[in-house]
Amino acid sequence: MTEPRRRFQTFDDPGHRKGPERIAALRAALREAGVDGFVVPRADEHQSEYVPADAERLAWLTGFTGSAGTAVILTDAAALVVDGRYTLQAPAQVDTGVVSVVPLAETSAEAWIGEHLGRDRVLGYDPWLHTPDGIARLERAVAKAGGSLRALPENPVDSCWAGRPKPPSGQVVAQPESLAGEGAEDKLARVRAALVADSCDALVISDPHNLAWAFNLRGSDVGHTPLALGYAILPREGRARLYLVSGDIDPALRAALDPIAEIGARLDLDEGIAALSGARVRLDGATGAVALKERVESAGGTVDVGKDPITAMKAVKNAAEIAGTREAHRRDGASVVRFLAWLDGAAARGDLTEITAVEALENFRAEGGDLRDVSFPTISGSGANGAIVHYRVTRETNRAVRPGELFLVDSGAQYPDGTTDITRTLAIGEPTAEMRDRYTRVLQGHVAISRAVFPKGTNGAQIDGFARLPLWRAGLDFDHGTGHGVGAFLSVHEGPQRIAKTGTVALEPGMILSNEPGYYAAGRYGIRIENLVLVEPREVPGSERPVLGFETLTLAPYDRRLIDASLLEPGERAWIDAYHARVREALSPLLDAPTRGWLEAATEPLGA
Image (cartoon, rainbow, N blue to C red):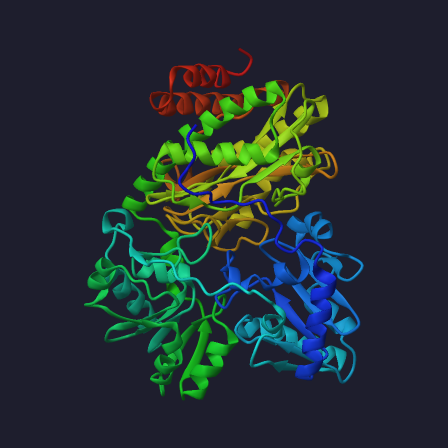
């Protein structure tokens, strides 16, 4: 394998166990600001999943590197509230003698504040890092404690952060219409029609994903997602105005947007908002900061906090985006199969570690062509590390992959024509009967989603249980959603669609989601199996209403060594065999002879 031109992942832990002195410095800054505590969410001013380096305040302060969590730092207590994905990871990264790790399932950040803030004490917050709904929840929590809430003009974490990175400045480029499938002018016309229907005069686009989709642009301001950070103001009539953090605008993009939009600097946003006097302005409830709301109101505008209509439009992929995504998965599948074949050899030689696996997989993807980034840091977990749902290997935690263990690798890539996300769990040596039982139950749930047929209007919550039923029968479950939405050369975690107990949005043809049930034996092993699926219309003879189903996009074999075929029903076995035949047919032309031979063996019919 040749080395890629650049590495997309590093294995340093940027704040591990450095919490005590940093939290002490923050408490000193809070005393100077005249407050008794401060809320530190894992967020930037757009509520993004992946944030620029200068917004990684929670990781710098506590050492916790997960993608979601909230720290509350008081003068005499501190807590980090995390969801079920991070209940194992957070205590391993945070000094729990200084910061208590609180599972969200037991106590929310607001409930913890209500119990610990104390009467007449002041809790500070950064108005750029919270939405209006989030602030309303904080206000209720603070009121319960008998305290008060105060917006701070400057984030006190920043004053403590020596060597804080500079804001991003990557180039902003055009996404070709051949891949986008629709011109920016036509997209904006659809958005304006939605504003008219909602009696709004303008939209403040605060989500960089929506900015990228609506204006057919891409950037590199954050890792793993091709975003240009910034905002846009879209009036019902007239040119839109973009306010981008980076000033490096590709001339071709500037020329393409010139008829429909002005491009300015992020620093000019306040000036643009000042022009909204008298306007009814839609602000996205999920990503619009309370600071934006306050600025619109100060300018004399009326804020309508609701849904940015772009979010729903972006979720439904058009024909060009679907075609590109299929092709990206074909190339990616070939790279993953090369990796899986290599992995078997490396494991047999005994020279496989979690980090060498990550590096090898990235190399294979780079050799496959058009790799722009990984779509998230690869989860490469052997043995007990595989039970940490969002485990991220570092040089400190890296371990050898040993015989008798399971190895879980969850990875994805960003290509100009599509975004991928795939998880495979692999046996290293001889698996135990329990491992095979649990793997097969997870696979049965995965296949149940793949085979699902459902009436139009069905939401993700209504089919989430399909993936859990085989585990429930054995008294088992998993503590994350079954599937998340995925973008088209955009975020690997895209809303509003999802397959989860909280998935209330109806699934529509053109939506792409993950299908990833799992099982986690804490301290021993983890199992997860993931493909991406496309919602598509289905013809059902005699159907009395429109029916939908899923096309599986991901192409890579399951580990037959972990399948207990005696647990499978005939329909499940037939689906797995048909999927393996499809994988073999689609990928064999892209592989060399030795890898084709490995794939043929890996995709033999069950029982053969």
